[in-house]
Amino acid sequence: MRRLLIALLLVAACGDGATGDLPSATDLLPRAAEAMASVESAEFQMTASGAPVLVTGLGFVSATGAYVAPDRASAALQMKVGDLTVELATVSVAERTWITEPLTGAWNELTPGTGFNPAIVFGSDGWVAVLSGGLADAQVTGSRDGAYMVEGTASAERVDFLTAGLVEGQAVRITLLVDAETSRLRQADFTTDDDAGETSWRIVLGPYDGPLTVTPPG
Image (tube, rainbow, N blue to C red; front, top):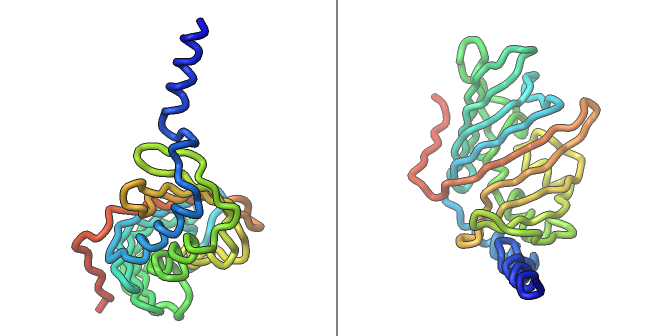
């Protein structure tokens, strides 16, 4: 019986996510920051559930799109108008952002610094800043599927960038999945809270460095 117990303890200690197999946050996060800074292009998906977050008066549901360094992004958006879901397109180049009209599909350019601009998520103020000092109380808490799980608190300034400009003024607890081989981010989960209630966010990242292009409308 004693031998069986010892064997079970050894198996548990060697399993995926065992504390002894994990890097420290102080070692992992700088590697992840460097890896994200070198991204040339990336596909991404962002979803929000719970209390609505508004973009040009419509409730944000999801965005699936592409980023091309250093400052270009495009996305197909799903938005809510009451109980109706509509699809829009958006393109951002540097400070300029365009979005389509829900009814006509015509492109409108927004005021600089407004709207949904996913390029800033990948910029130096987004993931790179989070990973290189913008994550307080960071800890590597486990591993799964070839990635490390990191938990910490992202500052209010960083959350503005991570939500592509949709949420500002609050710090959040965030859980990251960092690929063990490439040190690039695979996923981020966090919850924001405002007068309308809580909104749960999931950002899925990759694949990276594919042959993607982003062209402004017109």
